Structures are given as structure tokens and as C-alpha cells.
Image (cartoon, rainbow, N blue to C red; front, side, top):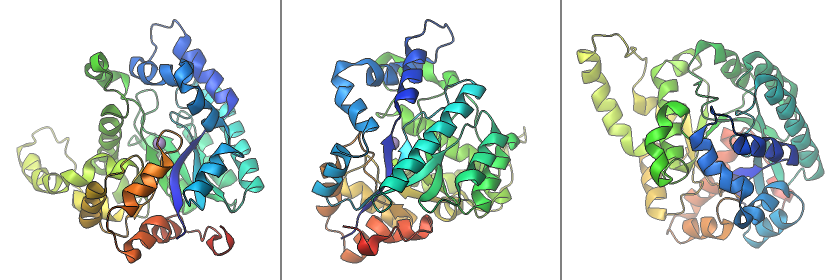
Length: 346
Ligand code: MN
């Protein structure tokens, strides 16, 4: 069976060097949550294989894909992308990272597709970068790693990014980042700022800010993809629907906007989800049942997660062939509006 893995990370040397500079700097304003999680990834000897796999596109990565029957990886620049950098540096580096991604896609047009990266620090530049790259056959979406230096995408200044994505028919992958500085302190004493909990708390909050600020009322065709089975939100669906009414009733500040649809409707109509890093069939089945089997796609989160475990998690789940076809490739073909050249891939 064809398998498309939709949240698969790569890096460039330049980006890793620049991120190391931030982690190793003595600046007082250094983002503690970021440093606590990415410091070891960038500096630790134990993480050397991880860095090697992030940089590789032509050797080990393809062998691992072949060993586990992954036909296609959808590549994206690893978190936090360029979102830690100053505006000018972020724009320069992201354009070079996107150009590098294009060379990889052109070298392996049947194995790799890509999500282009942007620099939300510069919304107009980001919209132009989407316009510059959207027509490339193997570019199928845009990735943003949650907050950018504490700024969230519900601010109207980012509407140009949503408009560009919507106009070009590209879904936006809202990928995790470590919690922003304003919410980082309580996560720090026990290493909770990363994949254990902080990534999901940060990213689900960001998704709710988009929903509750009315982004999807302004951009009803916008599709946002959440990894990690929806960062916890599918489990919260009933409570979101049931509490919004009563909260509006008690709200004297006017903070709670009147939305055109119920939270569960935005979740099923404007969001879709991937299995990245969530290799438990029980949880996959839950999200399939609550969010619908057309809204879920397979992902590994290579190289942070093990490809064999990701495939085995699905294969051992007792799912029907029909559902697995949707999960592994049919939903991705529809959501990314791309056939992925599967007919003559491996
Ligand atoms: Mn990831």
C-alpha cells in the first residue's frame, strides 16, 4: 500500500548554525523554553545521529523510507524554522531554505514533496514567498511553527499570509513550537516544554486563538493541519461546544466573540490532523471516530520519531483496508490537492 508521511523534517547547515548561536548566546532575553528543548538537540553528542538525519535527504532517509514502505515524505524545515531570528535574517534564511527544498524536490520528484516555510515576522514577505513558490508542482502546503517570538497568527497583520495560502489552495500546517516566553516558566522545572506536553499545549492554544478570533469566518476555505492527532483538541470537542454558550452568557468583557459556527464544526471543516508521533491505535481510532475518517493523515515526524513504530502502530490496529487507504494516501491527495505521482512510485 502507498504510504505518504506528511510531517517529515529536514534542516540546512546554515539554519542549525544560526539556531546554535541563539541557544549558546549569553543574551538575557534568550527564550528559556526554546533553549531547554533545542539546546540538547543542537549541542548534545547523543543527538548527533538526529542532526545527521535532519541534514540528509539522499542516503539514510531514503533507505529508512524503503525499509518501511514509505512511498513519499512531505518535507518541511524543522521547528522552529526561522521564527527565532530577527526579521531580516529570517527572510534571508527562509528564502535560502526554500530554494534548497526546491532543489531536493527536483532531484527526487517522486519521493519528496514539500511544505514551504515563511517568516511570520514579515507578513508581506511571507505572502510573497507563498506566491513565489506555490506553483511548483511538488510544493503542497505552508508550515508555520506556532508562535513567532510570542506573537500569534490571529492578529490581523497576518491575514495576508492566510489570504495567500487560501488563494493558492495551500493548507497551512500549524506545527508545534516550545511555549512562548509568557507561558514558559511553569513548564521549565521538569523539562515539560517540549514533546511531553509543552508543544501540544502551545499549539492547541494557537489553534483555538485562530478559531475564537474568527480567522475561519474571514477565511472559510482555509485548511489548517495539526499534527500529533490534533494536539489534544479532538478530546476536547464536546466541552468546547458546550461551554462556549455559557461562557458568552457570563462574559461581561466582550472578549468572547460571536462565531458563525460551533468549535466542533471548525475542527471538522477547517482543520485536519496527522498521526505524527502518536503511534497508539486506540488514540488513532478515537480521533478517526470523533473527527471523521476523511480528516486524518499518516505522519512519522522523521527523524524525531521511529518510522517502523509509526507504521506498526497503524498496521497492528486492526483498521480496515478502506480506512488505511484514506489514512496513508487518499486523504493526503485530497487535502494537499496533489496525486503525488503514486501510480509509478515504489
Ligand atoms: Mn514535527
